Length: 160
Image 1: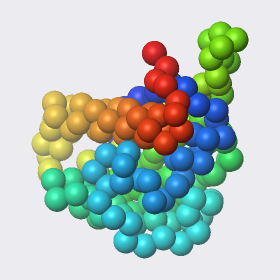
Image 2: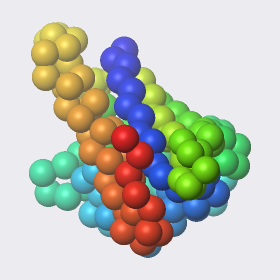
Image 3: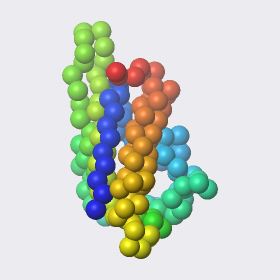
């Protein structure tokens, strides 16, 4: 099973970042490869499901089921797409202000555990040589774009 993670600091309060993360109308602006939501039932609450379609160069149809949804703390899902399946845990952490003049900051971390479901006997080698780095970059792109979206709409600035 492959494991990758990424994190970003956002110069915005935890509540704002949490709300942005689950604002469906803005997902396409920051979720790497998301083209459209196909179906949703009870999402993002525990037990809820979400199905979305990627851009043409992306993952195809992705199905998610929520395992845990702890407000302003953790969101954990299982997912399945045509080439992989796994678990994604997203953590949210309020950070202290860097100075009296700066506002609150939030760290968002994503940890992905996955298995390649296609590729036959060479799947492990392919994962190690190619897929794992692509998965890591996808997480980082999403988190970077989440930070940029928070800045664009909230007037926040990037935390370095």
